[in-house]
Image 1 (tube, rainbow, N blue to C red):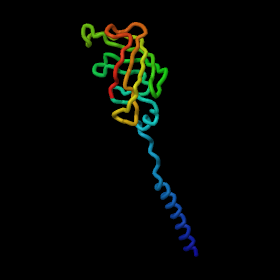
Image 2 (image 1 turned 120 degrees about the vertical axis):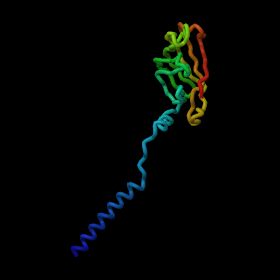
Image 3 (image 1 turned 90 degrees about the vertical axis):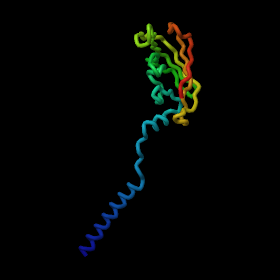
Image 4 (image 1 turned 60 degrees about the horizontal axis):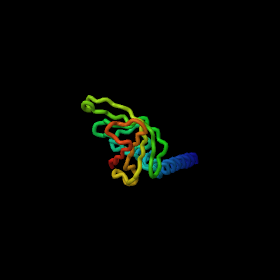
Length: 155
């Protein structure tokens, strides 16, 4: 009888362990979302794609001249970021390229930035990206620029 009781206890313990292990492995643990998946989930409104092809939402800085970096937006403060447009104030730092760009000096200009014309991002068509940027200079501006300048944003 002692042998039978010990066998029953051992079998019960083994079955309990098997049930616990079996149920834990039957439902795979949810893996944490990748950074890209998390960004896409958060991107219910369009993104701004930077020179490196990365989606940005309300960036503090943005390079306008990807080839040489001679024009960039800094100290951006976003007033709005919506499904149709986004608006910020900041500073456009522009190289005067005088006498040539490598020897030029950078000058800051206050600027109002507007992003609009969202369209599907070619890299991920489920994500909308702003396709146009408009810069408005309320005061001084680079000599070669108009008071309002509009550029397409690459996709």
